[in-house]
Image 1: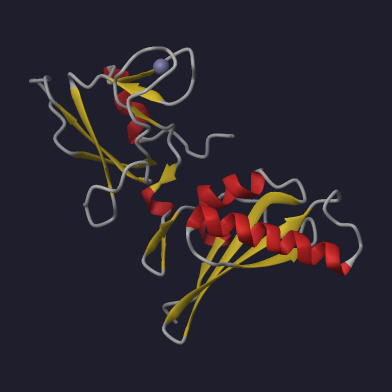
Image 2 (image 1 turned 180 degrees about the vertical axis):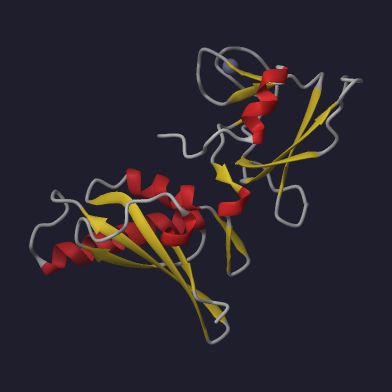
Length: 205
Ligand SMILES: [Zn+2]
C-alpha cells in the first residue's frame, strides 16, 4: 500500500533513533528502554489493543531535549511484542494517516485511509472515493461514492447490486459503521487526496 502522508512529525523524530524497521518489514520496532509510545484517541484516552489512534511519544532517557507526551498528529496502532525476527520490543504499524483527516461518525473514529485500504482489496472498484456525511433524524449517515472498474462492470443490474453489497459489507467490518455505497462511473470522482474534495461534511448545516 502506498504511504499516504507527506513528511510528518513522526518521520522527523525518527532521526533520533527511537524506532526501526527489521528485515521482516512487519511493523516498526520501538526502543522501549528509551521511548514510551502511547496511542491515544481524540480525547487523549489510551485506545484499546490494536485500535488506531494518535501516536504520542515520551523520551525516557534523553536529558537535553526531552519529548514529553509529544503529540505527533500521526495515526498508527500497536502491533504487540511478537515479531518473526525474534525481537520482543513493542511494535507499531507504519503511519496510517493524520489526525487532521480523522472523521467522527456516530461517535466512532473513521480514517479515510481505512476506506482506501478496503477499496484496494476489491478489484471491481477503484481506489478513489468521496465521502458524504449528513445528519438525518439526529443520526450521522455516511455515503461513500466509489468508482467501478471495467472489470467490475458487467452491464447487469444484479452485478452492480452484488458489488455494492460487497463494498458495504467490507466497509462495515473495517469501520464498524454502516455506510451507503454509491457506485459511479470511472472518472467521475476528483482524483485528489485533499480532504476538502474527498470528504463532504454536511452535518453542521
Ligand atoms: Zn522484527
